[in-house]
Length: 95
Image (cartoon, rainbow, N blue to C red; front, side, top):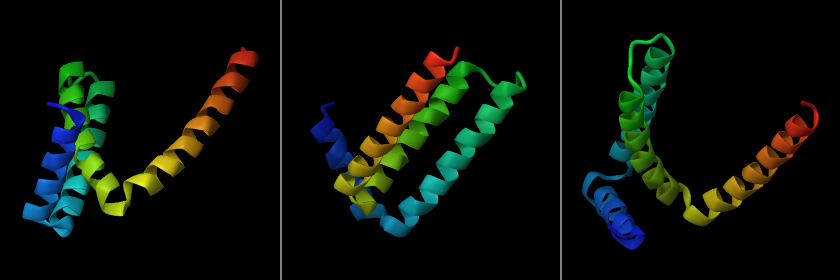
């Protein structure tokens, strides 16, 4: 599936289920990811189980990105990525 095909699926999901429902799914899927990470840290969930929840969260987060504006999110993400790079460089220099 191409990225344009994926975008089409996300747009269709938003059209069919509505934004309110999809916001609920964002909360649900990110909560499940949080729980699965905690289980993994305690040795009660496998990496594959965490990966499954990551995939679910990414699907709904992409829809959230569309709902709040892709350009807006991308602009903020770029700034945050640049800030992360600064932290990494600083940490590398102070090892």
